[in-house]
Length: 431
Image (cartoon, rainbow, N blue to C red; front, side, top):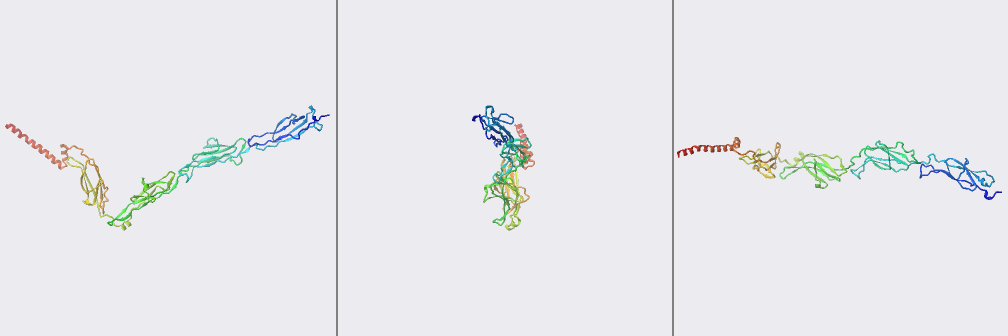
């Protein structure tokens, strides 16, 4: 007769754990398992007859059978009074075909060529760059100008004009790239330099012609023409044929520079980062036309004069001087200034070593003869380079009456001296 304690009942089922992929450990295949409980009087075995205890590992996608029998050696039996085993059939789910590999969230690189950012940053050139966005499960490989690809972190990287960048991506362990990723990667050739990135500003330069007015005597007076430039934002100044314009003389936003008729090259200087389109330019100042002169009155051209200037260096018997005149004797029609002072026509002494600058101008109503090549004359007297001895006097006297007189005087003295010698001898003999 069996005691109640010798009768055991196996559990209705065994604890079973399916294999589930862990997102925190991509690519790692988890274990499936089941647990054999410690039941007194019950022995658990697998299909091969091996005794099973505790946690047992199973492969996903398999079916495992566990056989529970009463421990007859110790006098246990199941309530049915038999020793037939209780069979547990355990089915373990199959994992997905990717084997717990997650899809990588890959990034698409951004490429930006060299560029300007106007009007906020005039004159500033922003270099080209490429951006590798943050991505999950992706390793970036970057090749620059055909070099071996290197692993590169997500971020922004500068380039030079003409650089060729190829970005490829590989999946980290436990990840796979989706079908949208191009196998050849992403390639970009960076364009040329964006240029100066200058911001265009306006500038104006124009030529005003000569004008004609009438003076108190009824003669036409021709006023100078001019070049007029405007004051503009970001324009520092102008030059006319290379000469800077004084912008401090601006009146009502313009500067007027008097000029004679002709063509002039006008250039502009701007602040850094700015430029003026179509400069430098040629500006023309026109002469007053014949019709305007007729309206104004007759030109003051009563007479044409030819100023004359003659100079004389210092000699043994002469002083340095210069003579101001007019070729036809019309000296009253010429105004002379010497070293800035107005003087009349005539001869003036000159001091050795002093420079004299004489300037001739026609008096009102007259004009300088067109054949005259210059109306400014310069003279600097110098000391005589030869000593004024007898030999020099004799030689220079050949062309100078004063020299002849001096030589004759010298010969007269010598002749008187020679005549006096016999008289002196006679007196001594008579004594």
